[in-house]
Image 1: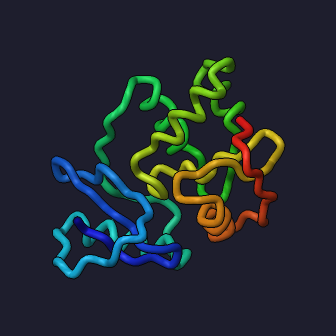
Image 2: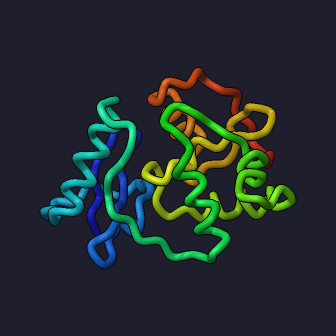
Image 3: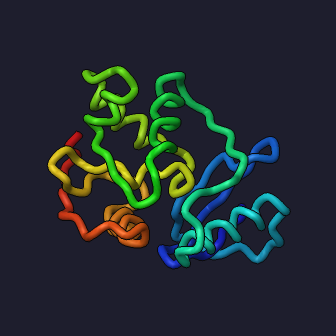
Length: 158
């Protein structure tokens, strides 16, 4: 299992068919095993992102989900570096304004954190809401992208 270090904690990376299939934060120790060329490139791009030298990722990814999840993840991936949107606005953008909670569930199922920037989704009231990597990491990712600190909210406010 390839696990790399980052300023926000260790990151587990998984590949499938020469594409990134999973990126998540973990408490597991950094791997000693050598990385293949794809994982080496992913680590390089993540290091550049964390040092504010990269705003977008250029990595092949493979996702496994429902058509609705794909639609949400595609919309999330279009949110520019340093910007945020709400669950409500995202549901409107995909043409399904009543699906706010379903959008939240799809975002929560994002298997490739950071690269598919679900940390850029905030509550309608402007507060930080759920993030699979933890609210502290979400806040730090947004700050890294130049966003002012936001208020944290314990409950999910879609």
